[in-house]
Image 1 (spheres, rainbow, N blue to C red):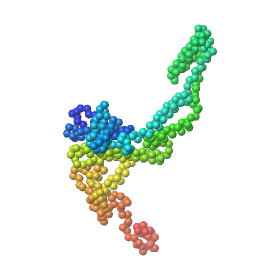
Image 2 (image 1 turned 180 degrees about the vertical axis):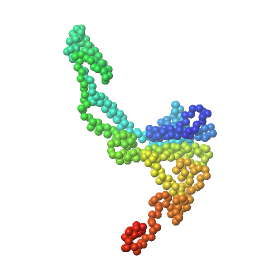
Image 3 (image 1 turned 90 degrees about the vertical axis):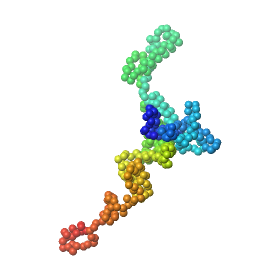
Image 4 (image 1 turned 30 degrees about the vertical axis):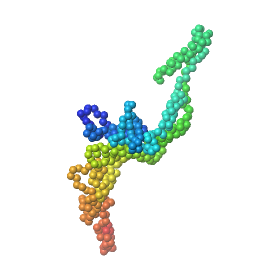
Length: 388
């Protein structure tokens, strides 16, 4: 289902498990639900998992059983999906509604407002902050060199003035930053610069309000969106809360894969069920997690020693695979207890387990013995005290 395909069919559009999960995550965020179908071959054996967009799903009531049946509307036709191979999972769906809602629906309005605010900021920045060229055409000089036919006719005079202003405007607007502006004394060129206008405080207040609405609507904390300005401790807390939210999305993926793979192995003749589970998200580097994995390994081995888990469960938790052939069963053998015979067992039955905390640090020297030479030889008395 993940790597191997039927090479005899040529190109195969079979998606890997990671690609299918990515499609499902996007569906969960956009529509609040996801669905998929287990595709079977001619022998009714699983070949691949095909994600189905919930945007095209329609539900109709079944009067015989009193439940809703799914149907896909695609290409102007309805495709019946009332099969055990089709799985539908919703995220926080309202029980009074047939179709799910997107968790990002509440973020649409503040996102649109943020887009309009950015466009307004762009226009204000170009008009009031960026420097602009102010070109003034001196009317007396223009009239002085105006043709006689246009000087005494108001309509022709207006047309001539508009034509000259349009030519100057096109020339100035077409200049590149490195171009020089050469003009006669009939034109005065100045630079308009309103950069001294202080609007940063007003902009900051408006931007903070929009950012807060976006974070609340999208159920994403400010530190994840890059809006956080608080201390690192608050950012760490917000990151942890966001990871909990992502873990909720992972639970839906685990449910989808568990149900589809359970059907797959049962069609292959195995009377078992599959429990699919993604690894927990952790932002710490692998080198830092090594010590925590060692502690977790010790915990798993302790449970295996007491018999609370089987050898298969312990092997999957430690290595991700089943025990190899010829593995000696260890569940319930108490191999981690202090009284069991092992490499770390001492003669008296105690065990140091390679740890200083578990070693017997009491000295074997006799206690409370007084030397008769304490008074006569102070040097020997000091040696005796040190040895005691």
